[in-house]
Amino acid sequence: MLEAEFDQFAAEYRDQHAASIRLSGETPDYFAKYKIEDIARLLSRSCRTPEKILDFGGGVGNSLPYMSEAFLDSSIVLLDPSKESLGIAQARFPGKAEFQHYDGKAIPFEKNSFDLIFAACVFHHIPAHLHIGLLREIERVLAPGGSLFLYEHNPLNPLTLHAVSNCPFDTNAVLVRAREMRKRIVAAGFKKAEVTYRFFFPRPLAVFRVFERFLTRVPLGAQYYVHAVKPDA
Image 1 (cartoon, rainbow, N blue to C red):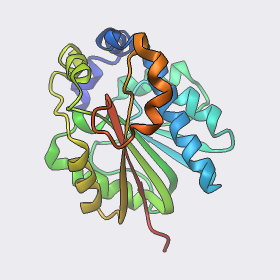
Image 2 (spheres, one colour):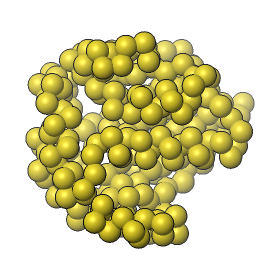
Image 3 (cartoon, rainbow, N blue to C red):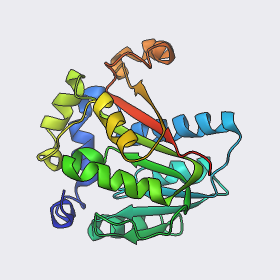
């Protein structure tokens, strides 16, 4: 999605997002917190605390309060091509991050700058022919041993398709299957990339969420993430 196209949705983004996912019974904050808790839990197992984090396509900053809480000693950069979204994020969470605009093509940081890169439902807004190039940029600025967590909507889930089809800022979205996204990440230079499916039960069926940890390989979750690690030099 072009900068100007996302700028026009920036002010209403949170309300439109909430309306589009109403069938889930949850708020955007629920999903934002869930993702960050996922990442923090996985990284705690490896005993690696990221010094510097890139929130790639962080928009209006929905993940930022949970990220800054989970990684208290980390510095965070929120990167986005929409100046309007960045302004809203900075007003919501002053001092929580460095708010950085970019042209949607080249990430304006040096090689090996970040220990953790997080992209939450960004790539379905980006034309497919640009994916591998941007993923190469992500690989370039990620430090050896660092992790990429890329979350996306799962086009195999009917509630996801309903939410996307009823969301104004997803009008031009093209959802990507997990297997294809993993292939693109590997093509960009990552040697190891694993898919995990998340969000299986809406709130009315929340009693069954205790079983979600057994379903992470079942390709029916509302979203998935690909975890890729840049090899140590």
